[in-house]
Image 1 (cartoon, rainbow, N blue to C red):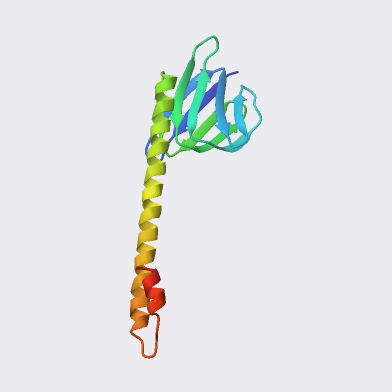
Image 2: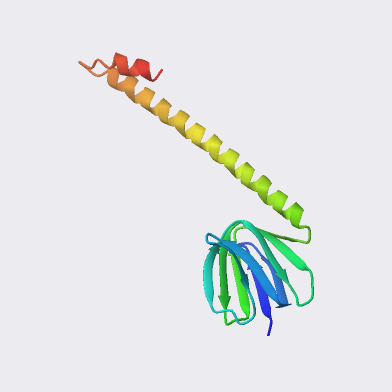
Amino acid sequence: MSLTLRVTTPLAAVLEEEGLASIRAEDASGGFGLLPGHVDLLTVIEAGVLRFRRPEGPWHFCAIRGGVLRATGGRLVTVACREAVPGEDLARLEAGLKRQAEAADQAARRARGEQVRLHANAIRSLMRHLDRAPGADLSGIVEAFE
């Protein structure tokens, strides 16, 4: 008995390998392995490198950007993820994942900064508008936001 691994993204079937002896992945609880005959399993896997091999063969790799792993019938393992890149060079795949994570962090920081700027501008605009209302004296509050 052997395993079949299918890795798909919304745009393509990235990988289909048959005759595998084992598969290794990682979820929130840590790393785990799958062998032929494994019980059915459904788990969310972290962004990282999926490892798989044939009997007596070397490990092969596929970098994934998180996803859902499903093992069924003790033979079929499917991974549905946002992005997947198969490759033979583990160090290169891990470096690519690290670059992607850093780029995502930078984008999130920029987005948070822009959100704060827009929020402050909205508050300033509201305060100026309210300051013009008859009988309103909000000058101290407006100055705090300028």
